[in-house]
Image (cartoon, helix red, strand yellow):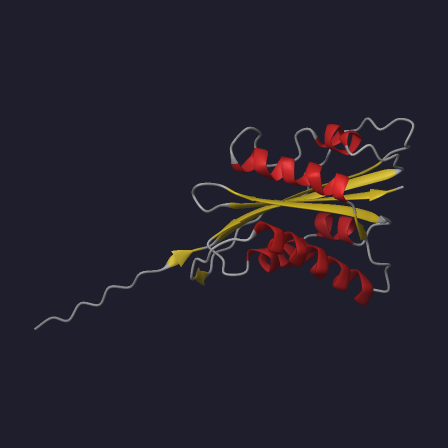
Length: 176
């Protein structure tokens, strides 16, 4: 008699991209720079997604990290949140490709006069704690880490999920 065992697993995937730009507020024209894209897999159990809770988790984890490094905590700004959410939703529904297309327009659309701005984006799927996976991925990447540790004072975070379970994260950093 032959015994057959069937294993079923879900795979998680993560992709990251960052753009950091420092420009004068009087001339906010620039091109975002993608620094790094990586992938990883892990066994997981898929769970339901609360995007507002994920946004808050990213905000808390980023500020906890900044404070642990002797840096001031960032202030969350609803105008920046709105632009980050729109970008995450546009990536999730395929309106724009994953990345930083339209970054300068997003920053301008906040209506905030700024001296510097940066952006981190992430995509992952299949993780039980997607916010932590995104933040941990950013912390392991020099380009993302530069944004997280950057001389910024405000941030906005947006999370969106697509119909296939992919979760898109955008965090925008601004220094006034």
